[in-house]
Length: 199
Image 1 (spheres, one colour):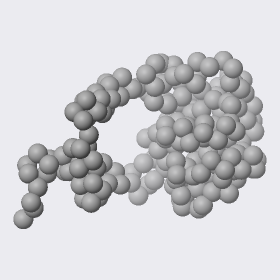
Image 2: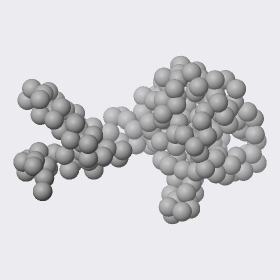
Image 3: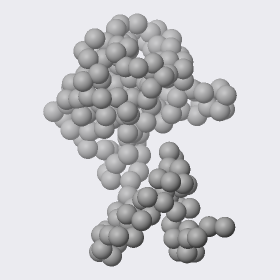
Image 4: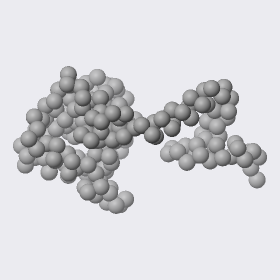
């Protein structure tokens, strides 16, 4: 029998529903939140609601943004001849932290995973091809995760893109195989971008 009050149990249950948060982590976060001043809890709550209400996918690159097009697509100081293809919006934040890449992005919103029923039609691949038609891009960098799904996605994209006569490169494998781009450190990711290979 659990000793938590109903309010505490409800908070722990909600926190535990987040990815990667087990019961102990949820309990620790719950007690941390409870110790916060009510003003801080209200700010946290307001930030969650604000993000859920205001964030949307950019109609060009499919990054999360408050505006459409997003701030990166609207930044004309960026190199508009290089496109970096990533799996998720959080990957853009990771790549941007390296300071190595100054081009534009395309977010696939996932990776190929037949076991999970995720095929090309479930990702933003058609949108990528449509975006490339009559574009000024010279190089397409495939920066999918260095795991089975990410590699399968990169290989599939390479086969789609090569006939279109783009220079297609893949970030170098200085990253740990089986890891997610989101968790890569800036140094490893920076090296992976500098040493990218043409496919």
